[in-house]
Length: 395
Ligand SMILES: *[C@@H]1O[C@H](CO)[C@@H](O)[C@H](O)[C@H]1NC(C)=O
Ligand SMILES: *[C@@H]1O[C@H](CO)[C@@H](O)[C@H](O)[C@H]1NC(C)=O
Ligand SMILES: *[C@@H]1O[C@H](CO)[C@@H](O)[C@H](O)[C@H]1NC(C)=O
Figure 1 (tube, helix red, strand yellow):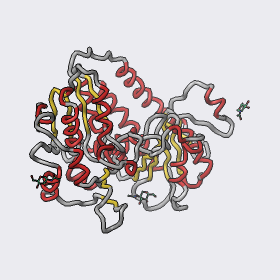
Figure 2 (cartoon, rainbow, N blue to C red; figure 1 turned 90 degrees about the vertical axis):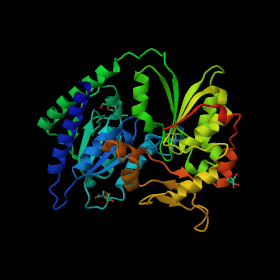
Figure 3 (cartoon, rainbow, N blue to C red; figure 1 turned 30 degrees about the vertical axis):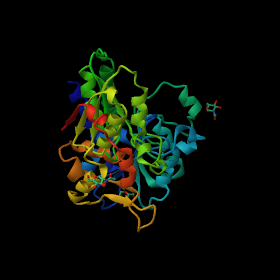
Figure 4 (cartoon, protein in one colour; figure 1 turned 120 degrees about the vertical axis):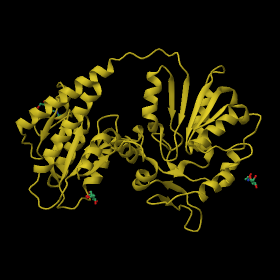
């Protein structure tokens, strides 16, 4: 029931946007429109992942942007001096657009402020501006006044501020459905915490977000769940070049394990490259782990060191497709970072996943720092006495 309602709201919004797409400009032969999506406060480009999927599947070009210090944008909240800094990624995107290109700007909530600014700066590059339960200031309605008013639901504005009433009404109804279904969900009681404590560690280029479905399932079964971002992953504030060694990469997990009460024992789950992180934790904190689960993960051990395992990986490696390496120490040295391309993700990693999860990944993926064999071998010296004392499970 809730699901179908949610699905219905997404579809209605999609229909609205598509209808805007088909009649917004009288420009000739382009099959799809270009949608630029701006998230609300505390969210990021990721918050549009379902809509991005739908719009792309209808042949539109979609750009979902992170505003500054949002999503995986590298700035942190304290780096921002003013809202001008906050809106900068959108201005930077609009500025180089060819003068003939006109995009459809869509904003949610506080994102309405961001698109209002670029409507003022680049009016000729915008065919229509959509405010989705968004703040909508204007020439005669300044921010101070707006902040004192009750929130409006949805408005669709032309760049020159003439609205279409009937469309507005339609959108309003759809969003009423959306908001009521959200309301129903948020009133659910939390289940009692009688279960186990799962600690989930993501694979290369991914983040804690990659566990969102499993985390939901585990929590709804009464377990407590901690999904961690490793260094420079997900929304961890470090950037890839801040990592000096794999020790920095694994640190968020060590810090978490260290801080656990002496009597607490968790179930550690590592996916893919995350197998290395949980292996190190097994060596350092064997008494705090009841079982370690390797989910299609690298599983080194006292008799299988990193170098050997890595050579096995290299020899079994499939096509690299659009995976991207950087060589920050010059072209004659080993690559320093790696990131999966959308094609590789689609054909090798997200084969069995719904397409919107692939979209989500493309909005949240971050480069992996590549560490030397020596570095990783040093970080992963695993003993039978400690590492070997933890129950392990390989899936
Ligand atoms: C989408 O728009 C961007 C910016 O104008 C452009 O660089 C890119 O080629 C477009 N992509 C497609 C698939 O049309
Ligand atoms: C905003 O608009 C109101 C009403 O028009 C006006 O009284 C107020 O001085 C304006 N504030 C700013 C900061 O411009
Ligand atoms: C890893 O193990 C292999 C085979 O046991 C051994 O030859 C190699 O020296 C080891 N490498 C390191 C860095 O310990």
